[in-house]
Image: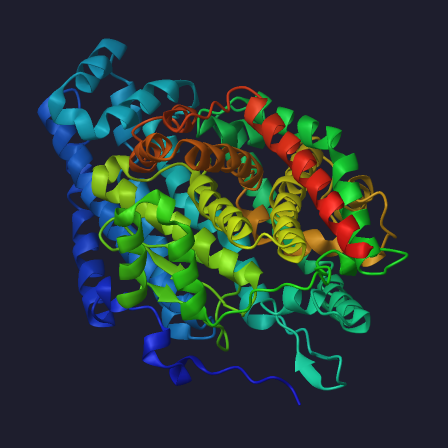
Length: 600
């Protein structure tokens, strides 16, 4: 019999997040939406008047007010939709606020071009004016973006196109979360179980190889059955990025994406180079696990199978959450208190239900506390997911409470640092608490596997994105054939000691991050930074924690590379990535020693 999921209306209230903290009702949302649209008539009145500092400040504050309201409206509607993607009410609300955001962009499109039409001396005077302190980074970025900013009319057209340009990603999300069905497979007892996005990885961790292969085959055969529509969605997403890059005069979509964070292309390229130099270590790790699991010929559906090491951590959600709090004690009582509030005040939506978005995320707005969506299962992987998402949330909390709205939105480049610091600290603390060879092997496996999934895997994704965009920019078509071939070759390179399963060539189809171009590499650089920060916290204690919290509080008051330097990490050099990979080698050597003793 297939596993039945609760409908959203059947989930106990205490097991849901409290979005009423954002808007107490849909009626309140509608009132805010109405107030937002009224601002649309006010914003254009400042056009042609920004040479006056007073009017420039009024215009910027008015646009900020509108953007802040729009952020609240969109986030609420989208999170309500994520509770159950089949609910058309929230699909409609998301569509309405998306359209309104595009209109807001068009109404305010004159601001940057008009400011840029002023002299650099004028802009520098605004940066030095205390009244503009909330906008100094925006103004600095404005000067930096001068070569890529178009005329007022052209900027208005680009702003109007934003909602349309996001269609490919929106269609993909709705298609894969709400419409796609993967059917059922038989578990190890011969019982029929429904296959979903959320339980796919747990199926790949099943000790029964027949179950793992069945889940793998069923999932990717389903994706392959859409080998015309999904590549078309992805090609549409890439083409929209190419349009904006060319319109703004960037040499490539990758250059445009990294420019936003003021990141040199060398950071991206040196990451790929360094990881490629360590692929032998990755393959050795995979080989050790194959031996531990008694597998002579390792396949891709075996990658997630944890070795049987005589130790495990399986806890109900609340117990797992309390353990996370306890393991993060080095970060201070103020950090722990916010974590407790998150649980007690229902910031978290922990369990899967019918139609709920898969995976996990931390979200929220400047005017709300952070929220976390997850689909918790009782295993260490999901415990670590909780630690990960709460790292995001605490980063947002510290940033929002220490920066004005205009400087609170930390860059995506550093977004994975705090989440991974939490993961590393939890695993390292558990290793201290459980010294037996069985526990050490198990926890080392999980830390090494985090490396595999976050540094090696995400860098492979980064290579895929780099190659796919380069293909499109050179005029080559993005089809299932071209993309599958390229993705298959990457898997052969990264996992040279695995038997090649042709279906893995379609795995790129199930990666939603590809619809946010050149995002995935930040997981790898973020993990490398987090390893360095966690090591400093454990070695130095309070001084390192204080440095780290300065980073958490910085928001976007600094460019991301400079913000990381507050925590003692300099990613403008390849050193942090190389050190992280050296740590992988050292941990792998210890893992090999411990597992060898267990095998005797």
